[in-house]
Image (cartoon, rainbow, N blue to C red; front, side, top):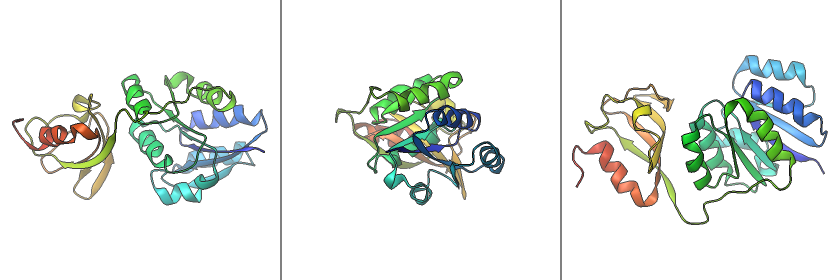
Length: 224
């Protein structure tokens, strides 16, 4: 029976990966993408790929794409934090593999500790690496083995240690990764060049045992 694969984003990586997988002719492929031009390019090249327009960090979109019946999901967007969020959401389903792409080598260790089955990097070899992880049955499986627990928390920016700083200067850190930054009614994917302002709300993935410390860093001017 053919495996059901969901590929999220990635533009050129996605298109090339589909081409590589189609040579094997044993996969049912669904693509989630929110860029109309990319979707049109995929439709023009492949007539047997199921296409879903939407944001894959939304659980409803994942379920529309058939994640409940999927065997493999590939988070291949160009934004590491998005791939991480997709990976975390995907752990709620009975998937054989969760494959995440990262362009930032400093994120690999955190991705692996969070139980993502496979992490591929660097970007230039992403589609070849992803295909290898899908096709080869003995690909390495990684989980946190219960050694470290993580939680997603929301923290207001109040501390002078954070105000005026770029996200890239603060994250990723050993104990946390900033995933989203909410400025008023705008919710932004964490980008290195976003400057933090007083009152911003951060969505942070943090080690459970370090949550108090992380909270204090962003909300207090002096650690106790």
